[in-house]
Length: 283
Image (cartoon, one colour):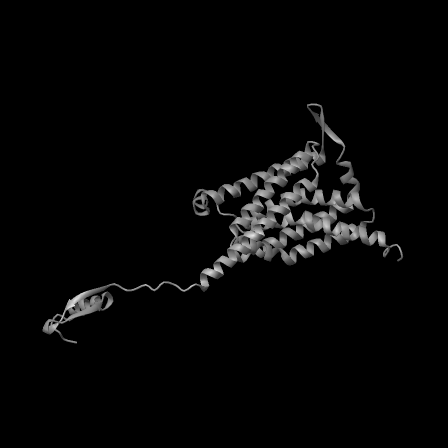
């Protein structure tokens, strides 16, 4: 028990938990964007199924840690560069992520209505398959990070389960926030393109420092938060300002004894309608 509560293990657990959450945010954003294609009553179920599959896949991969390590052995060589099983998964996963993000950006620019008329409606099964494919990529990255940090299996599993539980708790809020703010969704899609390109680079042994990726992402998020605060305050100011009074147009109607009486257009129309309905003046 002393080993279980040693400061070193607690620090390793906390660090791994934070890394699992950071790596999982990309997964949550992608799942939220895909789930938004479904009818409203199916979106939450798709998010739960997608994140549950991600958790089960990561736990399964943790139990197959020796197989994960074996994926680093070269399968074949291309232009003098060895390609391993892990490299293939990263390259294919990165290409898939870039493709999906670019398609989503194109849809936003073209207009969702125009895009919907030109393509098929998303189905629950189709969305789950896409979520499963990207779960494989993010799970592999997550498990490789975990295996490289600690040796205790229970610590890795605990960090994964807690991270996924937090994602399940916040997935709907993140999804609603992204859907409510189009600029945030476009920013998230741009991040997914960047992350996909990073996965491809990792697959061809071009290692990019994570700080160079997540640093600009954090800066862009900070700028977007300031923009959201500014737009919210501007909307409150406009709502508090007195609204201009809209005057209804009047027409001039001749009255007996030479008097001129202004009559609103609505009243004039009603009078004309009454005269047409009762030409003899009968009520």
